[in-house]
Length: 261
Image (cartoon, rainbow, N blue to C red; front, side, top):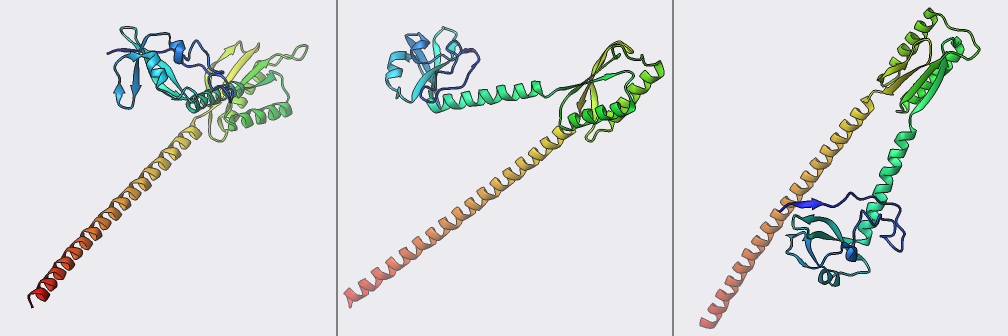
């Protein structure tokens, strides 16, 4: 049976006393707002037959639990699952973390302005700033334009400026690259777009993968140790049981000898 998914969840910060207060009511549909006489409940045992929504609601603890619409069948009957206040709060917290992370990513790019006839000292200072931003993992937009009312740079100065800047940035620790084609007109206003190469990201991913493998290996070793301990315990119990049987047999034999004598 095809189940059409519900609309994606959009959350805001949840109030402590009411975990559903911060959820968008048009996206997160709970309890009576499901608005149907019947509903299919999804549990760990699978997809349940359609039941009365009011019956399902009476069966849960309304102070800590909710029925949440997660989709509907091709017949239009809602599909619901049981969620708790804690789960709703956790969902909101996770959503907020994603929003903050996205915002940080948007704010992480930097812009540095130069003019074509920049002095050697000023150029050195700005190149150091660009290097620092790239080392921090930021994207950098370099805006170059003629200085209003200032001296116009010669073609040789323009070519040298671009060459010096690209050569310097290429030597940044960890590597860097132009992630977007230069925009504008050389000698007029142009924008160059630089970003750090993803060497750090690859190294981090490799490190995480190695840690994961080590964790899995440790877990495997622990499981093997548990299995070995279990085998030894079962062996000791079996041995003890055999000894008890032997002792019981010897006791009966002695008792029989005593009676016969």
